[in-house]
Image (tube, rainbow, N blue to C red; front, side):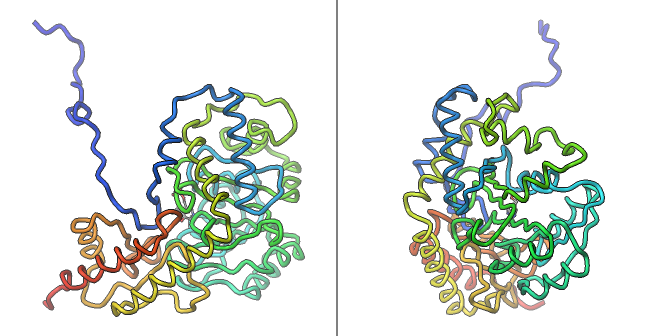
Length: 392
Ligand code: PMP
């Protein structure tokens, strides 16, 4: 007679082996993880305060300083994805009633404004249509009108494929007593960025794009001016987990003995360390050149297929993620499904304001190769031949 008290049986799905198909991930992220990084993440655990792990964290900090081109002491990786770094930046910088200016030309500005509003900030949005970028005078007008303490802008707008020029922006913000906060989740390692030279105060990225590590850790760095603003806070940051004072100590950035804050995702850190190591070995300049060259090859091929690039100006195209308009007579979902079903290739539709308008093709880190450009172009040619909808 069954005497078990259990009323919920073990789920059938969990009693089968894990099945992970092979796919080429050419969407806007995550990108494929190369064997070296997979192996690093598959290492046995150590205690999260063991000296070997602290050493890995120190190496990660140095790797981020190289990738960001910064000497900032307050440089570390958040235990979370890009959104977590975004929230960490805002909730440590802002107090209730602070004024923030958010440059919105795609979904990331929209999300940033949402996060800042939830924190009780006084949020002003500078708007540009998707596919366009901000000029210095657009920003200056906003700075003069709203006198914000922080400006948020996205370097690589992954929802639209726009690369935001950053030259002169930090200086401009500082002239107006404002800190510059930049999202480089989709661009870091794929397009030049120089945190110190460009006077960026807060910069963050994610692990799963050009760095080719699994999602789950997010490099971030704060300038001295940003640190000073955080030190002047009258109230504690509204999150314990993302409190930069605690994290700075945990990451050995404050010169004090390290104290337990949270149990770090150690294997994510192993993977991130390898991703940063691979970038350091390749060299930033080679990485930027590689992304640029493969993006140019992709754009040329897309045009030859009769597709229209969404971002008009060549220099404003993000080298990591290319957007094309959904061609007339096609449903974007059919094209994406065709590539997945027939070629095991992921590409993506639009996001936020670009939904239904574009297809997005990502070539990031190890995925940015000439061979992958040829593969995705062949698959798209096939899709264009097969997916045209007959007129109703
Ligand atoms: N910012 C940008 C520019 C991004 O492309 C992404 C991810 N697509 C994020 C932020 C959010 O990162 P995550 O999905 O890792 O939270």
